[in-house]
Length: 271
Image (cartoon, rainbow, N blue to C red; front, side, top):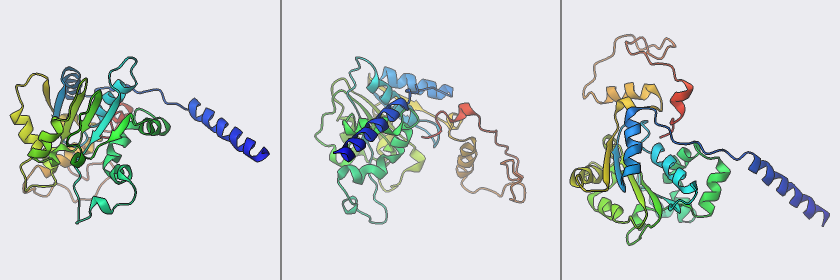
């Protein structure tokens, strides 16, 4: 009995220490004008479509706004629903992965969970998952569902087909909001019609549906990403000036100097 009591007391002390370390929620902040417009569009729309390059905050911002709505007093948002199209690589089938459905989807949901850690600590996030206030819905299994009182995030939507996109957007229910984002240049299947591009051209002009397009000037993850993307946008790049040996200042003896990263630059460093 004495040993059980000591273990229980140790567990209680650990729980109190964890509660003392509770992270105050970090509110979403726009670092660029494009991000400010994106935030306003999400707040003013029922469904928001967003495209943009890597590192521009297109995933981080809806994750933060979703958590903000989830923990707000008297909010109608009861849960965050994460959807992602699952692209199977090298003939690896989702069914062969170990564990239940939640465990199978963890690798695809990991980028969004990483984003959540910018706003809450691990224990808080784990509790929200345990209480099913954050749920993962594989896009392939979303048909027929009505997602009420939810903040829905469809990430990596450039990998959706037209049929998948139609099915996804029609899942939205009462008192719900949906954000659909992706990077058109990083589609993993060029054999199909891109569902994100198709929806953004097809659904313009409908009340309640908003659109946001972020650019290179909105990249905040790391200033170097913008320079890298610019090089990949050139079909047949010519060798850069210089001998290719870095000199420690980040420009490789070329003519593109990268500005140092400040504390403000990393608020939205994960996208």
